[in-house]
Image 1 (cartoon, rainbow, N blue to C red):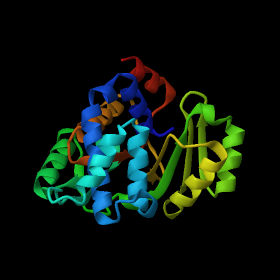
Image 2 (image 1 turned 135 degrees about the horizontal axis):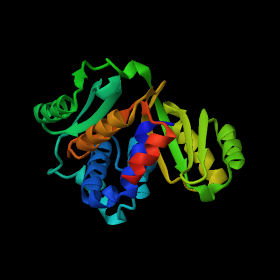
Image 3 (image 1 turned 90 degrees about the vertical axis):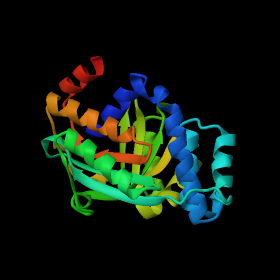
Length: 250
């Protein structure tokens, strides 16, 4: 099982998501504004904006906030954000990809580097770890969408590549990056509206880590995600069930 997604669930259960809701909405709004500015303000005609709006809705971001973020793209007060991807290694040789939207590259680079260094890791050059990942689409559905067989059948029909189903967490469907739009539309026709639809970095292999390194990685990911400029963090590690149970209870 992928460690990063497991830790996401742990942090959510501990209430971290609620504590960071304002910061989360700010990051979602930034992505919406950038997407609208780079293309058209119509989600139906702008795939990146459509994904950004879907991600915002999945986090229960109010419609008014979403519309303001879209409108901001055509206003004169919209900041110019630069997309930057940082890559490096954390504790235990775990690879991380950090996606940033920033109006100050030097500030972002300094903050990301400091987080890696404090955790005992190190930043690498662009491309130093991304070759171990695939750019992919990730579509999630709640348990209520149906059982594993039903979702698997719908995913195959839609042209998806893989499905992971969990009795508690729901269903996660993966597809090729350039097929996100078509696959998500086909799944919506079969299963209803998805909980989330987004582009991700999917690791080709995961690195097993022990409890000590798992805690260090969890702290590193949390520190990075707490930075206003950081949009997404991906890490290629996995944790055994016993360690995961300890971390969940801590």
